[in-house]
Length: 284
Image 1 (cartoon, rainbow, N blue to C red):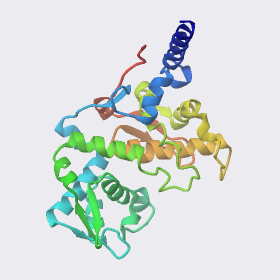
Image 2: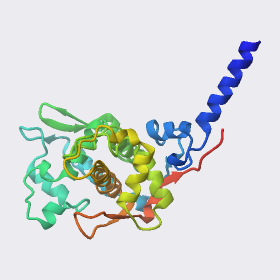
Image 3: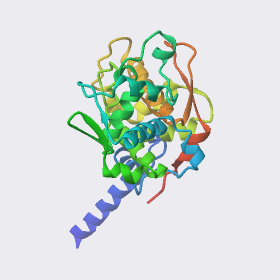
């Protein structure tokens, strides 16, 4: 009986520790942070994706670019890829000219659009279609899967798939030279919670970076900066990946940047609260 009582008290203590609110986690418990970190948008997670109206889905740039590419494949039955496995130039230009996502290098710095990799967002869209299981490559041709046939007419399910695939499976360091691929991607749902909580007011990106690394300090351990301090280097990496190349692509924030070398300023868009639901800490 003594052992049973001891085990009961130990379990109670562990449950209390796992369910206590932690200031560095913005008041969430270790248990809740586990759900946020590993199981975003799933049952038991404080953050969820809400269903939007048809008109609001049309305001999500990356979703609509992915759908446009999928429709091109569907309408033609297949797309013959280049010898290196990329979309042909004619199709790349057709996608870019839709204006879903513009590239600053192409718009303002004289770069030309010759191939898929000249537009990181088109390259990203094609990768997301592939790793989401919506397309397959075979014998140099790109076709849709049966999974795509079911999802392309369901904006809610398609967005959740693309959103979670981007957050959990895509390598966020793919398009930059930073030496740690985990910054930003790991705990990406926590960044959404930060925007939910603080995004009504325009704040510098470094404000969010500090809170992110306060919650996940282990991500700084392997950082070897190419310039400046570890904190500044990591903050810049986090900002570019989280805001410029994730949230902005989904239309849920507005970015203001006066100087390329200075902090950008972030405020949530009208779409954010329509799409993102965040529940407060729940005592178990």
